[in-house]
Image 1 (cartoon, rainbow, N blue to C red):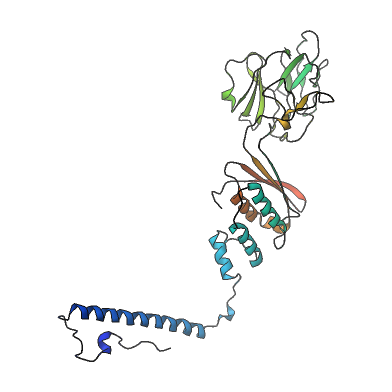
Image 2: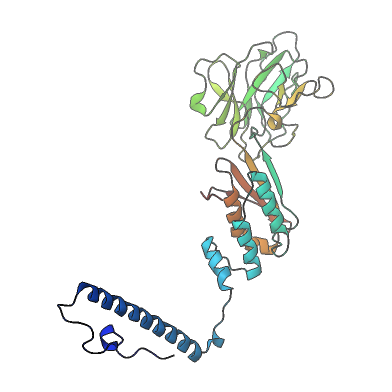
Length: 365
């Protein structure tokens, strides 16, 4: 290609004396000359640019250059904020597809789609398809509720304090943990490793059941035996049970920081009469006959709601999936509902038990 190395101005390319190039030239002549000069400068500049490009292409040896990723795939990864992904192009394209696709309105359907993709080739980041566990209520998470019953025909004596063995305490003599046909009840609280029992109260007493957000919300003028469910008592417990013993509020449930959530039917959980009370009731009415005798497990079937929807992803990751845990968390974060909590519970090839909480990213897709 020939470079424009000579003067290409309008004046240089026209015969002398044909146009007036002096300061007294007409306005139209000046405009015409300026337009022509601008046009030739544009042609010259682009011709030089093309010449330099092809000359460079022909003279440089690009065979020594190594490109690790298809440039357009790299561009898309950067566009979606995934430039730090180090997997191969095939995996990268799959990830880009998951991030860029149009999602339906249902959060659960979106997550199901993602978990299916993570389990299939080419990713194969999970052993089988991960499972989703969700619910509209958070059950009260205390280990045990210290309450005993008596079917005595007259007011029984207050039980003496007793040593509290974790999850294996027994009712004092003459008392039982079963509420069937009970005429009196006694609630206990922990003190220096012992269960201290309150004075017995007739089960016919009209107790007041309330729910409060924290300790400061406990009723100021309670009656003996009143019960309050505290969503967060600042001890690490949620949904703890408190009762008023006639002078102060006592914590009736044991700490759950080391015993975990009562999320399954557990014989150690407190029994709640149904339908005799209005606040502490089972979601599903138990049968009036048989072992339950109309009583339900409070810990797992409570209608006491202290939070919004929680979503648990249960997955067994492959080695490659564990290596790309950050990508899995990134994808889940894109799908997470803003107001709800989401947890990824996972093992690696069947070994270990781990949990990470997926926090909001603020992304909208």
